[in-house]
Every structure is written in structure tokens, then in C-alpha cells.
Length: 264
Length: 350
Image 1 (tube, rainbow over the protein chains, first blue to last red):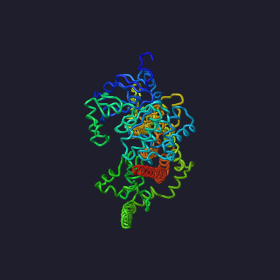
Image 2 (spheres, chains in turn yellow, brown; image 1 turned 120 degrees about the vertical axis):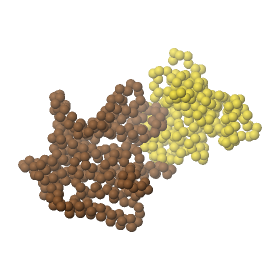
Image 3 (tube, each protein chain N blue to C red; image 1 turned 180 degrees about the vertical axis):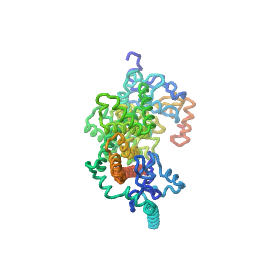
Image 4 (tube, rainbow over the protein chains, first blue to last red; image 1 turned 90 degrees about the horizontal axis):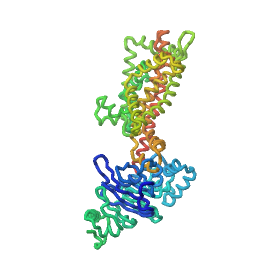
């Protein structure tokens, strides 16, 4: 890269990222840097730009201006093959988006076989290993509509992992799940975090974010208003907007806190 | 693509749909445009049970009694009483129709002209020495034509649909061309295209293309015309697959083409099979139009017989042969729709 890069060694570096849909600016200058093996949680109200940011990082949305460096490479430069970038950056969506006409195994092996040229048998073996690791070994021949929401979402995560990505982006992966199914997905993410996966997680699960994240970023109106260690952001938010957001979360009973931990 | 079972083609309200009824003297459809299947056969892909019921002047609450919520059955509603009533009403309708034909003043002449068994047999086996062809043999030409055309249509219409769905600015001229193509061939009567190609292309006196048989021209015309319709069916099918499926595939690093090939198209294709088969049923009948170019297909052979023997029973033979081809396809379509509906229901229960 001839252009000056970001701080060397960052897995993700976003510089002054803007994204508009027509006249509606969704991201208004995002700066974000994620170190290798770091887990960053994006929190904020719906419509604050979390999902759009993740989709931009995966190049699923063309950006309006700014730059994105992934593993030191400027992926917003012209001539970049988005397919090559996406093979290294997995993304999982709120709505699972498994391929309904394929078995679980085929869902997982499709991309490695078709894009990495992995032999089918090898891809299947790797897929079975991943499934077994996440307690889905008996589901490999099922079709997605035979699985519970939690199982589907775990399969979707396994599908992304099968590409052996260096970075995982997770877009509110538990929001579409019944409460009793949330835990199994979060446990999987915890295990990934323990394993050292670099992750950016948009989530409404505040206690999960507090447990797992190395850093929490609070977004509002397309900007990162506040970021820091979860202990700091959750217990002593500096910005008034962050305080308001967290107070609402606590009042909704979504983040049990001791009285002395109450924000604001 | 709705899972609507569609108007039951032989529903109790469709008396015209009984050309092979017990009495035998059904209204034999003669022209290629005639719809031998009654109300269900007339509609396009979108015809719904409700529209059928409305056409008969029934309220929406009555619509259920045709297809029923449980699939494309001819009769529904439980109980022996319902069965008895529907049997009686069917017999009354069919019997009434049979009586009209049987007791009409010109019935004897009519039956001789259209249903003379000896003439029907003669027309079926043909007799080259007497100057007429076998209708039974000529139908094979129709079969060959529609089978060839179907393969070509599936390919050409997919290309057109993909071009029309494309978004890149580079492909803009192609998109416009595809749109003009679809508008043109859907708007111009098929018979006119048959004449234009079948008579016009030979007149160009080009090498190779101007020296093909009328069968080849026929296949070309059917392909050109039906691809315009089928490309729209494909397009609807592509649109029926949610955008998120493409996004999920692309997010895994699959190229646009690979994502279409393995993720979007298989799902789209499953959704369009019923309307596609509906178009193919219509295509099977339209092969008869190629007869105007002199190809000896079934209707043409029947016409030659009729004008050399002065008996129309050959047309009845042709009608029966076309029905034999289309009815199984219609029932097969029904079964696919039903299977698809069950599969979706099974999925929705979770």
C-alpha cells in the first residue's frame, strides 16, 4: 500500500467512515481500531448504525467515504476483490440466512469447496469436526427448517468458521432467538473469544458484552460516542447519551446490576 | 409463487371440461386456441381459486369448496352426503350436456362428422396412398418440437431473466434489449411470428439459416416467443428468493455467479416449477401453429384428412391426442404444488 496505513498490526482499522442511503446518513465518521484477538462489542439503540458498520466491514455495503483496513490492507482501494476479502472476514446475521435447500453439512461445505477449492471430503471432515465441537454432530444431515433457532444460528456461525476467517463479525446474532435459546449461541461465542478469535459483535446482550468484550463501543446516530473497557463503560459511562441508553437497558431488566454499579 | 392449488381444472362447475365424459359427446376443442381443460386451462399462472370462484359469481366463502384448503382435490368437504350431492350434480350437468348433443336436430350428422369411429381410426393410422397422413404419427412431430423447444426455452429465458435482473451499469444496453425483446414477443401474436419467421427467413436466402425445415423454424419461433413469457416466470422466481440469501452467500466469499448458481437459482427454480409447467402445457398445444408452414404435425394431418374425406373425426383424434399429452402434465403440476405446500407447512410448524 502506497497510502499511509493505520497503526501497524491492527486487525481492523476504520478511518472516518461515512455511509449514506440516499439522503439518510447512517454512519457519520466512524473511527475504530481492533487489535488481533480482541473482542469488541458494539452497543447502541436500533438504527444507530451497528449493523451497517459490520456490513461495510464485510464490503457488503459500498461505503460513501473513508477507509477500511483489514489486516493491514486497504480494502476500500479500487481494484480490491471483495470475494478475497470476505473469505478472511466471516459475518453472521441476525436472521441466520442458512440455505434452506441444503443440508447442514452442505451449507457449511459449500463455500470452502467452491471458493477455496477444498476437496469435498476434506471440507466435510472439517465441517464435522466443527459441528462436533459445538454440539451439533447429529444435525449434519438435517435441513435448516428442522432445527431450532439456536441450532440454526450455531450452524450459521459454524458455516462462517468453516472458511477459517481471521476476523468474525456478528450482527445481533441472538436478537431473533427465543430467550431460552440465547445462551447456547452466546456460549459458542464465548468459546470463540477464549480461542483468540478477533471479533466485532453488535449486540443487545449487555451482560454478555460485559463478560466477553475487551472493549465496548457505544454508537448513536452513526458515531462512536464512547468506548472503553466494559467495566468502565457499563459502570461509569462518561457521556450523557451513554448514561441514558444504559439506564433504559437496566430499567428494562436486561442488565442486572448491583445498586452501586448503576450508571449515571 | 403462491401455493394456491389453483382452480381445480375439472371442478364441478366446469361442464365444458368434460370432452371425454361418459356420454362421449363432449365439446371437442378444434382450434389450437381452444382450451380443452375448461376454466382451469384458460388462466395464466396467476389464476387463483378465488378468481375462479368469483368468475362463477360465488363469494369468497364459497371458494373453499372448490380446491379446499387441503389441496387440489376435485371434491372436498367431508361426508357421504357431500359425495352423493356432488355425484348427482356432476351427472346432471354431464347428462344435460350429453342430452343437448344427443337430441339436437342435427345430432346424427354431427356425430357422424366428428365421432365416426371408422373415420377416427382411419385418421389415426393414416393412408398415404389415399393422400392423407396418420394423425397418430404426426403427433410425434409435435412432441419432438415441444421437447426441443422446452430445453431451449429453459436456457434462453434464464439468460434473459438474468440480464434483466442485472444491476451493473455496463449491462444497461443489454437490459434495454432484453426488455424490448420480452415486450415484443409477448405482444405479437404467435401465429404472426410463425409466418414472419417461417416465410420471411427463407426469403432472405442466407446460407444455412434460410434452408432449414419448417420444423426447425417452428422450434425457433416457439423458443423465441415462449422465452419471453418464461423469462418473466424466472424473474418472479428470482425475486421470490430473499435478498438475504444472496447476501449470506456473498458474505462467504462466493462470487455473484457461484452464489446464483448454488444458492439463488435452486430456490428460485423450485418456486417456479408450477407456473413453468403451466406455460409448457400451453406450449404443447401451440406446436399446432407450426402446421401453417406445412409441417405435418397432428392438427395439420387432421386437416388434410378432413378435407380429403370430408369428415372431421380426424380433429377429434387430434384433440384426444393433445389431451393425452397435456392432462398428465397438468396432474403432475398439481402434485408438485401439493408437495411443495406440504413441505412449507412442515417447515412452518417449527
